[in-house]
Length: 142
Image 1 (cartoon, helix red, strand yellow):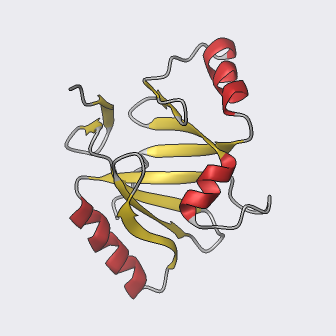
Image 2 (cartoon, rainbow, N blue to C red; image 1 turned 90 degrees about the vertical axis):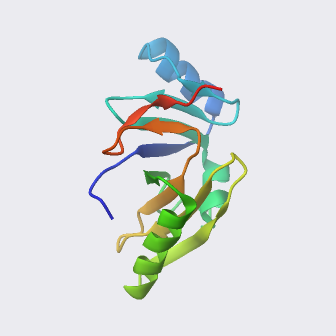
C-alpha cells in the first residue's frame, strides 16, 4: 500500500448543519454535493462529510458511539488493485470489516481496521480524477 491519503470522511450527526459550517463559517466550496455526501477538495486530497449512521453501516461496524467516527481512504486505479491490496491485507491477518464490493455511489470499496480500530476505506472511484501519483485533481466531467 502506498503511503498516501486520498480522502478523510467525517461521520457527522447532522449533514445540513455540518455543510453550513464548512460552507458558511469556513468559506469552503464543495466540489461534490449529492445531498447524501458533501466533498471538499483540499490540497490534493478530499474531506468528505457523510451521515455517521450511514458511514458505520457502510463499513459494517457497530454504531454504538464508541470508536471511529471517521475513515481514512485511499483510492486506487481499478477494482483489481483494490482486490489485490485486500488479498495482501488478509495474508497479514488484518481485521477486514467489509470485503470490497460494488457500492451505492458507483464505485468499488472495502474497509479494514488498523490495530487501534481506525477505519481505512480502500476504493476505486471511477469519477475521481487523479494524477500519476494519486493526488486528487477533481471530479471527471461528462
